[in-house]
Image: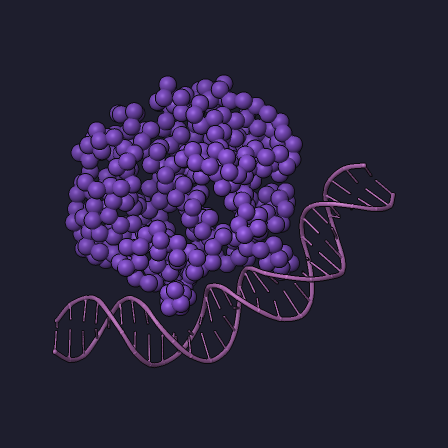
Length: 183
Length: 183
DNA sequence: CGAAATCTTTGACAATTGTCAAAAAAATCA
DNA sequence: TGATTTTTTTGACAATTGTCAAAGATTTCG
C-alpha cells in the first residue's frame, strides 16, 4: 500500500485492521466517486491515479481539492455532518482505490479506541494543511500561489488541466495561462 | 463555563477532567498570549473577551484567526509540530481564559483514551470550518466575504478594528471601508 | 478636559485580475 | 490518420482591489 498521508503516522496494525475492512476498486477517468446533492458516506484512499472535489458556482466549475496517489479524498462537507454535499468527487485519471464508509471506520474505532489517537493525528495534519491554504489566500498574489504550488506539488501541475488548477488556486484560467507565460 | 465550540460535543465528565488540569487567568487587552518565533505549548479557551492570531508579511500586520468567548485559540502552526510559530496571539479585549499545555492534554488523553473521540469531533469541526473559509476565497468577492462575516459573526464586526477584520478577510482596510460605505 | 495616539474614511491613481470572444494547440477516438 | 472535441493561449477591454497620501473621527489617558 501507498498512503503517504498515513504511513508516517499510523501504526501498521491499524492500517491492517482498517485495510481488512476496506473495499477495493479500479475505476476509469471521469468516473464520479460522489455526486453533489447526495450524502457522501465513503472515504477514498487513492492507491494510484488522481481525483478532484469540485462544484458549480454561477455556472462555473470550481475545484476545491486535488488528490493524487497516497492521498485521501471525500466530500468533507457531508461525510461528517451527513448533510447533502455541495461537492462532487471525480476521477481525473484511471485510478485504483480503497474505500471505507465513515460509519464502518467509526465502528472500528469504537472497538479499538486505542486507534482514535491516530485518526486525531491525521485530522491534525489535515487541519494544518487547510490553515496553510487559507494563509495562501491571505498573503499571496495569484502568481505567488501558482509558484508555491509548483514548488510543493510539481507533478500535479503536469497532470491536471489548467482550468482545474486555476480554480483550485482561486483565479481564472486566463489569468493562470498568463502567469505561466511570464514565469 | 462557556465553551460553545465544545459544549454540544464533549461530555461533561471530560470537560471536568480537562478543566481540573487547566489553569486560569485574567489578562488585559493587548497582552500577548504567544509571541512569534517561539514554540507555542498552550491551548487557550476564551471564557470572556476576544483574541486574534496574526503575523507580519512585508511589514503588514495580517490577522489569521479571530476568537471570542467560548472559542479556542492557539498558534496552530506550532502547537502540533512543536516548530517555532510564525504567529503571535494577542488579546483584543480584557479577557478571562483557561489554558492547558498540549502536552498535558495529550497525557490526559493517554490516561483516558475514551476521550480521544471527542477531540476528534472537535478537530473535525475545526477542519470543516477551515474548509468553509477556503471556499470563501475561492468563490466570493471581497464584498461577499464581508457580507458573509456580517451574517455569521455579527458581534465580531462591532468589536474588532476594521484593519484586523480586513486582513482576516484577505483585503485592505481601505477596500473594506469602501465596501461598508456602500452596504 | 484636552492633547496625543489610534483608527477610519476619502481621493486620485496604479496594478491586478476578470470577462468575453476567438484563435491556436493538443488530446481523443472512430 | 483525420475529424472532432477539449484544452490552452491571446487580445481588447472592464471591474475589482491595492497603494499612497492626507483628512476626519474616535479613543485613550495624563
